[in-house]
Image (cartoon, rainbow, N blue to C red; front, side):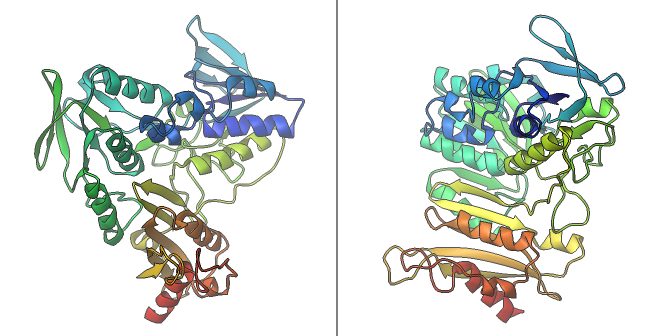
Length: 451
């Protein structure tokens, strides 16, 4: 069986590895538009900060490792057309166009960065100091620009995960940073304002200028620098980083007859099959089944892409595995703080037909009598009528096991537990690390009392 995979990031490599594992006699070919197979895009901020000095270390596997697993990796192959009837793809290469045939196809084309409607943005690029940040190539260009021009001032447009991570990375690199966000708070798709205010304070404590509720309207190149025009005034910068979100990269799929949803994401079933026979899709280019929602959503996350890719690869190789769905679990470090969230917030839960009720709790990360205890802020959301757990947001110090605690909530959400059932969980305890009633359970007790 000839299995062809378009894309070599999280979904593509997971599909390729699983297909070879599940069907060792299959021929698996993976086409990449660039020369960076299986690199950690999530690790880019930590390379640019200097914490991971060599960009090559962001590779989960080397090209030689991938080839040794029996996968034919072809870099710098940009697929321009798919013919599902003839079961062939056409790709451009540095030398000449090529055509390849397949029995089964997996599409893992990922996402493209959004380009907000800012005057001047389309006419400016890396040579002018204006950067997008979504690929290894873009990361290396930004790194080179920061070094070659001795950049001292950067304006970041967008205060989502990448914007906040890059604010930390550039600050640690000695660059003055301003973050501009058009919505009302940082991490607007993750945190309610009550907790987002703590992250703004953390950023500002490290010298980052944060302005929310302000829209950038224009970028201008003036002399050797840039002028950023926003609703709250103008700022000068040596470089500008635009990280205002992503959209599914699905033009190729659409032109091939693959069905898209109203967000432009590929429609797949639980087995990651598209509407076109013998074509699967996975990762940031597809919609995502959510354990708490009846309708699929669009949640582009690396963890999700790996899981979906593995399922698509197995099924393309003859399996029948189903994707269990996600609950949207995320975590990010912001200097000395950690932010985590999972499940639904009030507005999302209401739109899905729940009756959400959210209670905020402050609980120590371990017993207070043991030195070093720090507070964890938890916003717990449950359904007021049924008591079902719907979501949680946490903010605490780095080292307070915030990721572990949000993962506990995520497991509970995945299995449909109620808020009250959180009290039954047998969680680890020792005074330096926790309490007999863990912080996540204290939050559940407070939710039940308030309800």
